[in-house]
Length: 65
Picture 1: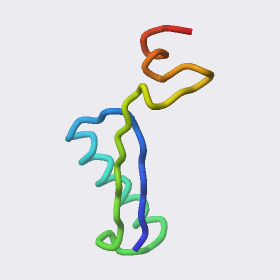
Picture 2 (picture 1 turned 120 degrees about the vertical axis):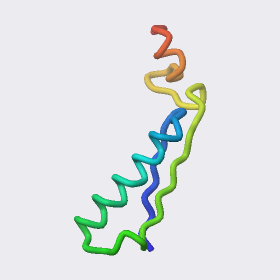
Picture 3 (picture 1 turned 135 degrees about the vertical axis):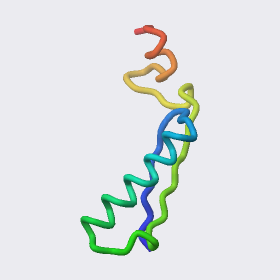
Picture 4 (picture 1 turned 180 degrees about the vertical axis):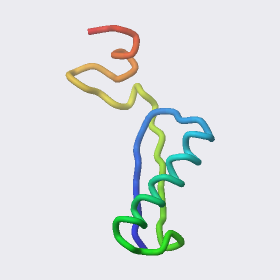
């Protein structure tokens, strides 16, 4: 079974539902594998756990450089 993994910050329940549906639909269309065989895993990470350019994403969103 193919597994699609998506990592992001906090998402709403509706965003997760939409991502799962669209990832599954697109992957099925491209690979010709039936939708029921796909597993979608969404991993939410606190923004203080991810850094870019030496600062956390949380700090980036707050406008800190």
